[in-house]
Image (cartoon, rainbow, N blue to C red; front, side, top):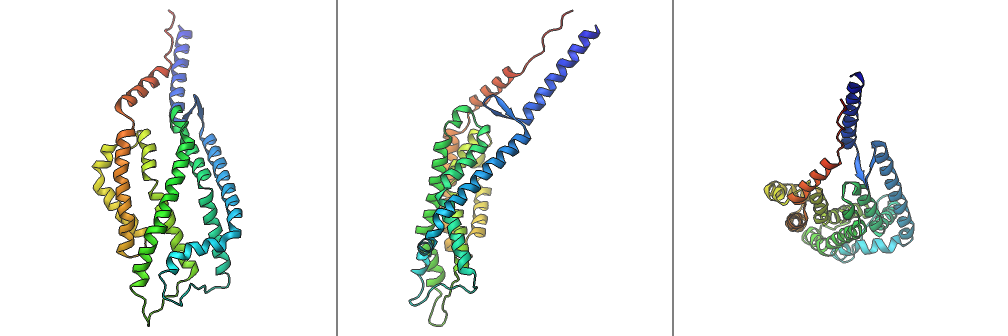
Length: 289
């Protein structure tokens, strides 16, 4: 009788430990990863991203002058004749070219960097979904670069024309600093690149069951308010630039609703997943009398 009670106690403890382990760990091809292993994985991914950024910087720094000339072009074209950019600190030109090299290197290596990001979150996806990791990374890089190009070719000319063309005069001469301009351009390029990632991020979250199209429709009013708040924080304090960022973001939010509707996890899939989890749980064998 004592042996039977002991076996029952051990079986209960094993089942409890298995359940707790299942809550702590994340699936990865049938194996599990502890918290320390996740931290180790995060460290390795970050190291790869840093190395990739360094390689991109080394490849782009020697062309930093030409790259910066290209970045300055939308602003230079709106400046009054005879006006140019300036720098007011002895080291400002040197550090500006360093930042240009880092920015261009990050854009150059963005497919690899975004692949590392998606690879880190891949354990939360199913095996068949993880096979799409490389295409997702490529599409993510294309969306990011596409958003940056939209900001450069569409928003920059209109925004600078409004901010400088309408307020410069014979008395008021604009003398923009290369440091301030690069800071503004970098912030806008990264912001537009990130907002164009919204449909892809929604695809991943909807496949994980964290976001649904009904949820996005329900909270559309709050999302709309959040969009204008974010745009006001990321853009210069003028209505034109804010609207030119908010407009595409609202359209992308609508596209994301469609993405969540067509590609999100359906109720049947959720039920099947729950059934599979129940089947995987081990049940104690009946005790012999």
